[in-house]
Image (cartoon, rainbow, N blue to C red; front, side, top):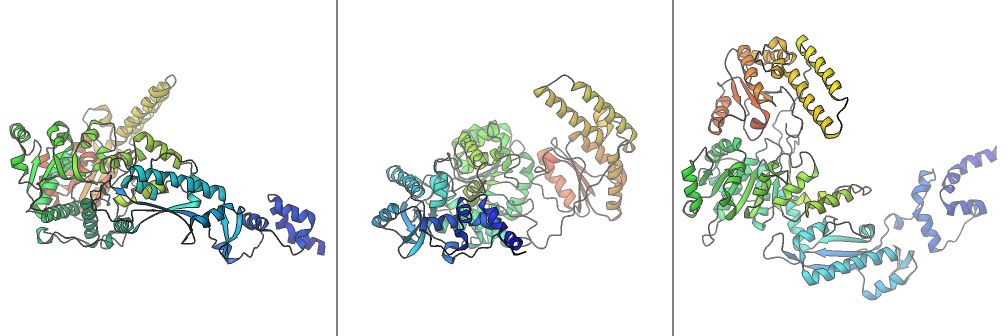
Length: 623
């Protein structure tokens, strides 16, 4: 009976012995049952293996000094000295030392430590864990970096990479493991203070344009203005990525007023430039007139000036721009008016900055030719599809911070294989330059009602079912032979066909006969909107397809008993704001049908209590 109890008692030890030569030797020799005096090396071996003993079921009592053990580390300090000017190429001072528990080791002490046995050593009155080879490897690496910094200087970009835990050149480092365990990088007093402010906007000194701003900022908006003001003053790029509806526009307007207010009369005058989609021109024009009437604005777009006036301005912009605070233009106009690239701007702001997510497009390349003292990107979706979106955005905001596209891809690939760390170095690298607040965060905004999302399921009409089934048969036949790109192209084209059938058979056939009873979606939409109409509330209806806006508006007009509004890519820019104003009027039309690409961003539509997505965009980030 005692033997069985002993076997049960020792079963965790037996399990541990399967993976630990140390425990196996103790068990086989019988030394396990007697008090033992161990060497430092044996004790270190035991202490290192304690996690696997515990996983085997052994309960351990460990000394406190091991739980909070100290080890010598290479300590690197960047940016201790205050810099007169800051930009991405500014040079930071670089200090290197070896520290033990916060105490700097002298060269003599370090030499003595490196000469001691590896593992657990008694040094300066305490037990210390040390791996001489790894410590020496880390020391050699940082001494090489220090020598290069002394010769060429350490740029702000390189310093920020090192602080984020990334290599200075974004390549995969040899000895990266040694540097993580046996070295650490920290900001000095000056750089640390700057980074604290960037990471905590509520700690930044209050900056307000005063009476020139005809609005009252919410606390989080004031923090956003403070943050933008700090980054613009030191010449660093900023990405304001607040959730849609939190007021990115008003924060930028406040910043522009601050820039005007603080302008030194002795400085050469340079206006700021705002680049935006054409669909947002009217909204910005209205917001600027409402909140900042003192800002002198110049719109460069065919909706605001004819070709002759634009040609005259291009030939001699100085007389006009010398009395202008803000120039507004569209991405398309910017690509055509190359003279805008030759000017140096005080500040360049991109609205809906995801427009430059594809680095190879003409639009993106054109934007990146702009010259300015500081840059801001406004977007609710800094990453829509892949991490290359982020690279392209930062290639505009802070050129060089994320390296070349080739080096960035290699860096991201290496991060994907890291155990535990994953993308922390990349997140740490971009974090100081991105400010994102969400509507769902009650600490940001607490007077906004909760959003209720409901999936409305629709059946197919008889005609829809017939068309759908025949299309499935056609696709099966078409896929029998093709392969590769041709096969994928077929699948995508039929997916679009299925979406059209589900909307309404007439969208696929093109016969124009949009009978509501022929579509399960139209029937379900009518049921939803009947209830909305009975409450005398307003609704927005979004569709991916421009050709669907008219039939939807006709069906809703019959249901609500009065006409509504329609906005799509073909709607003139000048007319768009008038449509918005009509809908925002309490007595205005009860429904507004919009194509999601033309009307899904940058329009202030707050009168509607309901939003219906008649069909879904491929990428939820766009919605």
